[in-house]
Length: 354
Image (cartoon, rainbow, N blue to C red):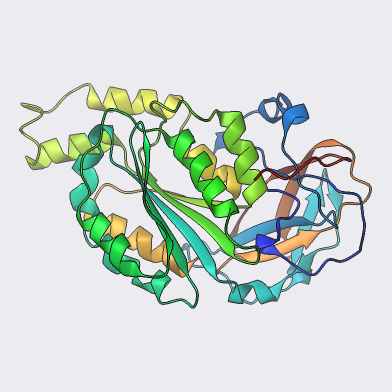
């Protein structure tokens, strides 16, 4: 999260306050994912930051009940935000519900992604609710080891739909870090005052990124305030399921007993797609069937405007890493709160990345 390129803009609360830069690290209790905070500190001195008129920290926050439904109708006074364990005055920008959307859809075509193409049938129809929104703009990227901008931002669904219908297998790569960095920079070129989203459809781990590192992705995503939503597939899981269903006998002659072992190894290694989603306060879902994919796409479109745009003004923030905790003042059953978890503050900003 950056100190505020105004894609999640709220009225400036005080003029000419110190410029600071804010961007997230990766720690999310709900997911069980933990990427140590020292990872962010290693590149603190090289971070691109923004010059702004305010030190407002924007905290997009999603509140879900135990059954997964979104809790609406909450007010600023219903939330508690702590910055390094110090309670802050919470502001809520209700006007952002009317912000137009810019969204990049990035679909992996490399490695075994072609196995997932049948599960993605009907994706173009599921995009109709996005195109139906006023002034919505959608771009489409296909990626393997390379990034292919199939369609730049458009409000016309025709080129997007045509490309989705003609997905073709790519090479042996899945350059997730590269495509996230590229997409965030693409979104950063969109006008301010727009909600910026990346829908990443990919496997869980990066294979073949050569243009962007983890540090690069953390920086550029923080600058653009992009929220990343991931619909992930596991090549091991889908391979095992397809083999059991007899739908991929051309590739394996029988059930590969190593598939569960491969899945276990993947679970013990870094999950690139999940880390990026948590980094931005987005959501991460895994699909292994067409029905699951469609249900998760419907959830995604329904939740595009479901986040509370909370914010606070740090009180003389010390330079460096800050930890944010967002919670409900009064518990509401087993409701969960999903938000960015950290930000980085610097007293002197440097030029905004273009």
